[in-house]
Length: 246
Image (cartoon, rainbow, N blue to C red; front, side, top):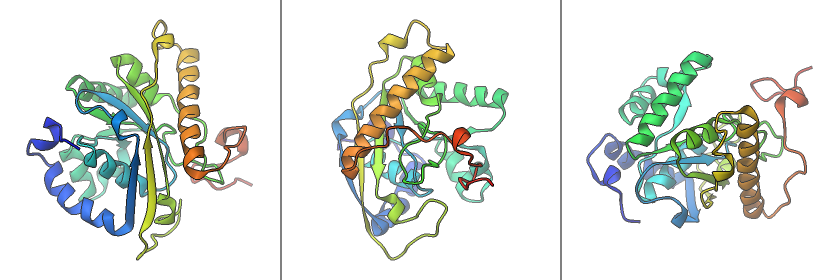
């Protein structure tokens, strides 16, 4: 794909990509579907599902291959990891803390990235899925909030196969080169939600629609029907590690 100015212009992404892309190729053969749905220029919000600690690497490589520089809203704790934290800061990633006040500051930082005409990747579920069969669980409103606040394209993404490389809460399987499918869907039409973009009911409804899109794409990739009911950790008695509470 033709590179956008943000990819072709020298930046911290260049040396990182020179290292990460070839290494990722040792682990995964990435098949990208719906490449035409990722804008070649301008701001956007990309919302993928999350079923492995390794899939941010896959998502980043896929976005880079399509000519855009991948920027995530990432957990604040990752910025404290040696080397990784420095790389995240150098590439303009946005830390997401747990406190609501700081979280608002993170949203403003993400909005600034969008105003600069760059894309932001926001995990639809906000964390790893807790669903036992790795289907998308209940979504968080962050991606929708950002898209509505900036009138940005909200693009759903589904990915599958990464769990063969690094199972959720498991250990890295190497050497193993897995077939990973990344599908990018058309941008959602959010016009029906534009009149009340900050109302909780609006955000919840739009988020449900986003999760339905992602789940439908994942169902197509897996060749299996999705569960009729989406997994809800608060109703299924799970803690933050995804383990069942006694």
